[in-house]
Image (cartoon, rainbow, N blue to C red; front, side, top):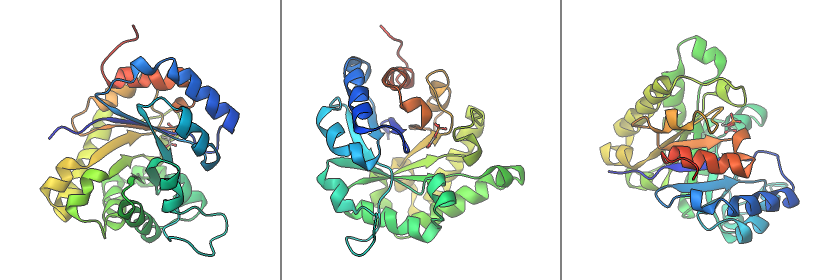
Length: 257
Ligand code: PEP
C-alpha cells in the first residue's frame, strides 16, 4: 500500500491574523512547489483558522493544534470538534508533548480526544515521543508503545487509514538536535509493529507515521525517505512560507526550478 506523504506545520502560539495572511499570500506564490503527490497542512492558532480557510493555497489543508473531547459544555476556553469542522479544519494535533508537559494532559485524555476527532470525520495527528531522561534510560521504544496503545485504545483497526501518528522525541523539539534518520526509522517501525500487534496488520500498513523534531529544508528528505516515515510535523521551520515550500520540494525529491 502506498501511503501519501504529509507535511504538517505546527505554528504553536505564533502569528497574528495579519501575519498568517502574509504567510498564505507568500505560499500562494510558491503553489507550484506543492506537488499533488503529497498532502500539506498548516495548524495555526485558532484565531487564524477562519482567515486561512479562505486564502490558503488549495493544496494546503487546515489543521488545529488542540481540541476538547466533549461536544459542548462548561469548559471555559476550550474548543469542540464541531467548531473546528465548521471552520473547514481537516487535521487536529492531539497529545503534543507541550500539552502533555505544560498542561498536564495524560494518556486517557489524549485517547478521548483521538476518539472524538475520528468520530467527527477529522484526522487526528497523534503525537508520541520520549523525553531526554527516558531516552538516556533506553526507554524510547517502551514510551512510544505505551502512548500509542493508550491513545488508540478505542480506535478500530479499519479507522487507522484516517489517522496520523507523529513520532516527536521531546528532546528534538525546537532544540536543533535530531535522532539520526535510521534511529527515527527504527522507532517509527516499532510504533508500526505496536499498531500491528494491537489493531491488526492492515491498520498498521495504512496508518501514516510522521517524524517531528527540528526538521528543516536541509534535513527533511533524510527522514522522509526512510521506508516507514510518511512525512514530517514541523514547528519552527514551518513559520516561513519559503521554508515550508522548500520542505515540500525536498520531501517530494524535487529541487526549486
Ligand atoms: C513541533 O512543535 O511539533 C516541532 C516538531 O517543533 P520543531 O520543528 O520546531 O522542533
